[in-house]
Length: 196
Image (tube, rainbow, N blue to C red; front, side, top):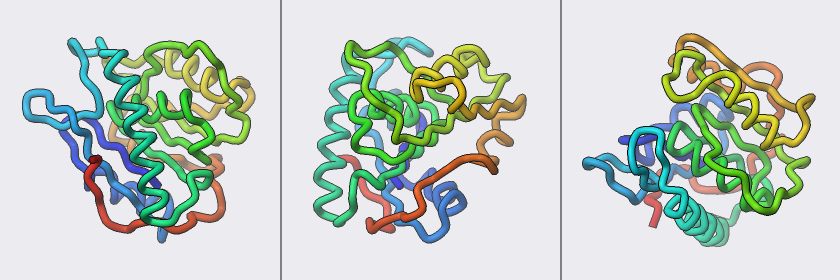
């Protein structure tokens, strides 16, 4: 599982969640390289809720290259990779899904936004996607989260969207009962790594 933190987090932040979601799975925690007021992020933004789309795109490609290298170094299959992202990490994970769906088996996204629609819509039918959003979150509303979920999986019947007024409860519930994750975690690394 590839763990991508939110603004101000680090490569260790989501490891406990990864252990809860998939006990015994190999976890790879990654730290964002962009600093905003000293806080790590995965890509720049111009203001709260205003993303630097150009930087997001180049950083997503950089992350894809990192995954390529990590899959060789730690001997894991990208086709079995599950990405878990929170906020800023979920945004770059969503972009990774849109640009490189062949890299992933599943995506678990907490508080994600999809900032733009790509020119080429790829086949996402092999992916399991979960989007968890707190209905009280200031920048994410129920409609936009539902639209993003439908966009990512392509079929409204395949959407599982978890909404809650309490952000902490949404976070701790994770994928919940109905989610489908691939059955084999594959091999990987069990300790955090810096995104380099």
